[in-house]
Length: 497
Ligand SMILES: NC(=O)C1=CN([C@@H]2O[C@H](COP(=O)(O)OP(=O)(O)OC[C@H]3O[C@@H](n4cnc5c(N)ncnc54)[C@H](O)[C@@H]3O)[C@@H](O)[C@H]2O)[C@@H](O)CC1
Ligand SMILES: [K+]
Image 1 (cartoon, rainbow, N blue to C red):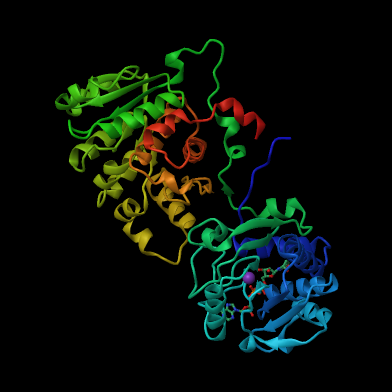
Image 2 (cartoon, protein in one colour):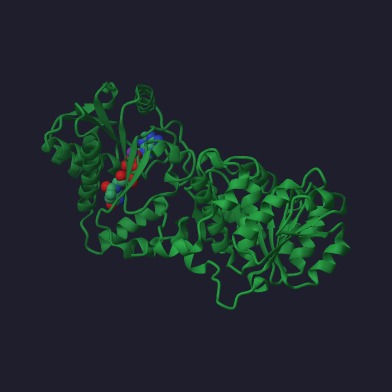
């Protein structure tokens, strides 16, 4: 069976999903029983021989999950103790039911001391975390982190924002996190991903229609999101039906980045790839190119001449190019001629302070603009969006995409792709060794190559980012950027996903 799309939902949307499920006749406490059971099952599966379990329970429904798990583990023969943050008498609703069903002693969190050999269930805060963690909770979280014992987090490691993946004051470092129904952005956005440990997504009986009704166009970036939009070769395909990618080279000392992008574009399937080089760098480029063609582009008039050839349909501008007026001028000519442009590296920095000019160019008929900033470049191009630390990387990428009419690939170990309509995807498949010289140039080339083949923008950007991570995984930890293009999976593999 082919795998399905994987929606990612914010904690606020998750609250709406819960309400939909309850409104459709599912008893709310039953959801909590299922959630607690999933946590207990994970403890038994992974730490069944522990000396006991200490359950740290907060003042809301996350705490309720903790009491349910404690009861189930005790029933199954495990020694369980519950510690409450605040007076457990004050618990309300389903959490009060869970406390009553626990029915045993509840100790104060003040008295909790980490103990070797025991496991911790972290049920202090989940989706309802509203402010920075403070007081006794801080002391306990830091003590547990320092003690290095197994921690199973209910829904989210306490202190982690499920919306942004950021830490509110301090946060537990979990060995495993059991979340419910669908993952939240904070499970994938950094530093959240590192704090969650192994993520388990438990089905607690919420119908998928309730989840689908509340998804807000955010997914995990996996092949089902874009496999059906991948370019397909027909029996009568020839090189011109597969697009012609142009990659701009820098001066004679900065030519390697463009060649990395060009090779990636060719390997991902563009019919033709040409390095567009200043005359001064032609010799350096010519000495290294075989299948890839070379053409001299020194100024705007040369570029206009090239743009008369409609077969050049996609461009990469930025890697090694140099920052300044020339990059802005070239980008505007390409977008003005209604072509796809991947603006990367120096191309992005060239528009720092000229953001409106870029948005205006991207709005030209038939133009498709991709921007592929890492964090520093993003902050240079979108200083106002980047300085708003209360917004998640997803929301920041969405704002940037809307403002510039561009598909934004906000790079990092947690790359986020967003388009102007608000669709977004988070990548979680990039290994740490992908952070190597030339890696970004290759991503730009993959994207330019997919765009040349006519793949729709959002899907092309998601596919390029995922393929980039996948190629790095296949290449292994000794990766250098030259290896990426040679380790791309064949598109035929995606029929299996
Ligand atoms: N709503 C549902 O139907 C379900 C919810 N479930 C659980 O319920 C959780 C959400 O429950 P809640 O909305 O009650 O939220 P939480 O239990 O995550 O936290 C809310 C409580 O913590 C307090 N609080 C928030 N931030 C604080 C801080 N920094 N310091 C001290 N106190 C703070 C709030 O005042 C409130 O009392 C989920 O994470 C999940 O674990 C599950 O039982 C599955 C079903
Ligand atoms: K928690």
